[in-house]
Length: 427
Ligand code: CNA
Image 1: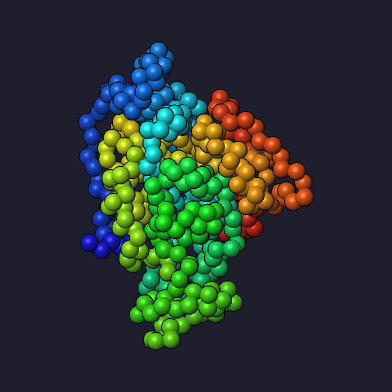
Image 2 (image 1 turned 180 degrees about the vertical axis):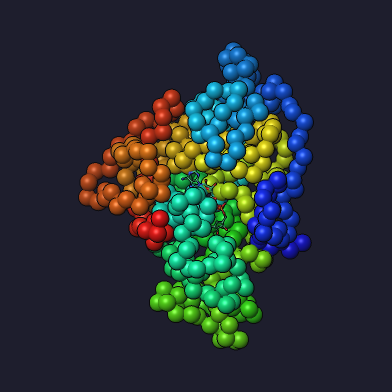
């Protein structure tokens, strides 16, 4: 079955103008509630006997909160802090919650086939706005293009009439302008450790490849700027020529039919790349699903979260609960850590003992600075990213704090060296 990209029709939401192409996420009726204990037993079944004993001595109710980072019926609405029977800081699970459970299982060698599902949120720390974050998201900043509706920038009919809004966006997103950040390098290290089964990304910024995630480990589900073709007859067009024309405010046209050429970024209603369909083989093999920085609003990508086996842990790292993580109750092995992605990922990396390795990669490949040395503030990662990059040139590489500082709050922020984005200026 051919699947095309479409927006997701949300259950119980306002009357939607969105059309679901392909298979939308079904609006599941609420599942019957499950006692916290069954969740604990399932988690225990993934652990060694000594792990189980340690866990049980901490008390079952405490363990229930800990191992399940978001269970106990505590499911926030998007944008609302976590709250509920388990007391925890707003927007963040307990520091000994989801990240510790997943970190521990990885260290025990129980999770060896990790599938990562990623969205625009993993690149905001590189200075690229996502779609939907209020105020800074791309959709909030499209006014100057006079679009009939924000999604029109990825509408092939609109593009056919007026390619300029998309070309403006393309000028910003063409690989080369932004640099990978800590989150990208975390995924690369996941690969280096032999744990990455596949990364499925909705992003079109090319930062996954740029940070060294190999082609065969990556599915760019919404296409890429690496190739281009006619939007009408699909005749291939040299990607570099298309880029040069777009960068100099020109309009590349097809040599066969003279219609407008488009980088092979998937628009609404268009087919997804063939590689996407590897998911049918990958997801049944996954033993951990990490969902990072996506609102899970675009189908068919969003529905992938429902295709891992029900016994497989799913870890959401995002600012807000999204997709099935908005519903109550969660699956028994659903974990979430809400907050800034760089913070969450760096805490997980410390638990795993990978932080220094990631930081070294950043320092060597990006000229970045140690997160620990960076000023931590209440600014969002995007805002941090828009600040001028701190240079490490010439100076000694600052030493990072030790691994496993898991009791501490997240430390530094974004080590990006990106240039400011035009979207940033439009905020
Ligand atoms: P989205 O709908 O904008 O959702 C992004 C999600 O990430 C939201 O839930 C945010 O709350 C969350 N988020 C953003 N920044 C952070 C952060 N620092 N820490 C934690 N959470 C954060 O974007 P999706 O990826 O879900 O939508 C898919 C679209 C976006 C794809 O088709 C892409 O082509 C498109 N897009 C890509 C890019 C890119 O390539 N970098 C940028 C903007 C849009």
